[in-house]
Image (cartoon, rainbow, N blue to C red; front, side, top):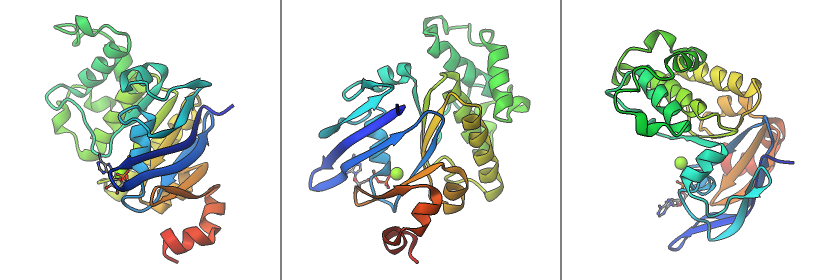
Length: 245
Ligand code: ADP
Ligand code: MG
């Protein structure tokens, strides 16, 4: 059974059909890339899956349960986490405190936040930071981090919630090539550890074809191809409409 099944999903904005009768699945432990030109509907798909937006038609099933209509907070509790195209962390808190706050939130201890964040879950936060290569930055203010490291911190925050599905909207956007390679390695490691599946969007075809188990291609809101990276690369429609060859 698939971890995530999207069935005939559609969403319009006025006259624009941003997502048009899209169906796909993400299996347990799979890394699936959603690609397509700007305006293809990738972010809208993410916003539908994580409950930010309601679909006009269609159904979303997560781990056997229909999740259409649930709120982001409810989906978060079920194990769907999201990182954004523009990374968001608390800039004046330290790197470790950002992760500790996520751990507090995950355990619904947020009411104890005042004065407690400095102590609670510190060692667990540092372990998560080590996993993303940020252990040495634990006590720096988050605003002091380079952009690539903010992305790593965002990943640690997402992992603090022990997601089963991680939605990553252009995780490597705005990163230098060196940072980008590091982040890809990192996410690959997280998926290889098991337990978490990743659905991600990405402009760099190098990243997509090296990392994804399967690739979904959107154009004008419609799924025009899907398959292994090799299958998608060889697809004539994709070559003509998207890869430009
Ligand atoms: P992508 O992430 O692939 O670049 P989007 O999902 O952001 O594409 O956008 C798909 C289409 O839907 C675009 O035409 C975009 O202008 C439109 N769109 C997305 N979000 C909104 C919105 N909140 N209001 C109106 N139109 C939107
Ligand atoms: Mg987008």
